[in-house]
Length: 542
Image (tube, rainbow, N blue to C red; front, top):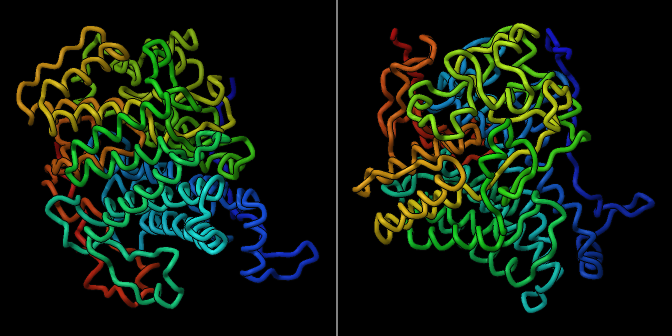
């Protein structure tokens, strides 16, 4: 097996384009009315625009240019890694080979940060695509005629837009409860003119959530009443919309509704958790019966053809072509917080998702017949304790150089954990405990017993299960914000230069400020309204 000993830098940029409905075959321009007539006659012609909603999520070139290439510029999976690096459960190092050092050190919270710009531009580009689809369909189909395929497409666009605003509002403001009237986001819908967008103040947090819920309510109605067979799980259906509304209702404190929505997502999707057997080897890299929604990535996607500008390069410890294994140093490898790992029972299969103190894991032996130390001796890859082996290489082939793994956006396990917490909050702790115990005992640890007696203890237990189960999938920072928890890195395996005194709940550094790319073009947001530009914390010696 060959491991690359160096990283090749890429300078070319590729842009994702949607369908070319604005052109006649001979090159002339189609008027808006003519385009609407084309769509009315054959709504399937809009399918390329729907595909662009999926492709935008995993594109290369959101912020890269011909002169500057960012190796974090591989779409939403990169944003997930940013959120996890900014918490307390994912360990790496502040080093030149780690392209995610800025969120790790909280130095990306400034208006000029490229990573801050990536979050903003990716989601607002996605919103723009959704709005364009809605404009076309609303113009082509009066409300009374919105059935069948056009109605389904409307539902997908509305749910996509709700997803973007749900991600953005949690990034640029503290969680809903207690901050309802705080400044949220500039709202852009299909009704917003280009002129209005240049003078568009931040709406309140409540107004943003009102839009999210309204979009999801409509999306569920359209999708549930006008189902189509999904081409793949990158396409949104009613189960995804229910899952998104479950997330939103948890943030709003609508716990009974959240439990119901999570249950609906599970029932409608027919999704079931990964089995113990399935997660006893490196997994989470391709569409699975557990996935309700995901980004489907193929060898032809631009993030794959770049070689190393993709999520496996930065997160998978078993790829043959990436920063994790190809640099000759361990600094870019993503590890679990040693304190969290020590809390995982030995009987829990998830403990094998990371190398132990001896740099070994039963998952490696079962999948590949080799131990961690054997791999180190054979390849020279400098694995250290607690490195993740949760995410498998493409095709299950150790050190496969093709980084074309899919990315999970919503799994059955997340919905079960939402349902457990929401039932405990809205009904009683016993109801939540039953859901949690049934899941963990059946799928992760057959000796598990939830010992929580109070609601507060149970919420913390569900949070612990989320920290372990969803590690690396982009949920950790939002959980900290929703539950109003501190960030704790003391007395763990974080290096000295990224170990800080505890960062108190709702410290200004936990959220991002509006980036310069927005304030430079939108005079509705003045510099005193971008959120506090908080100084990065100062490392402390352990």
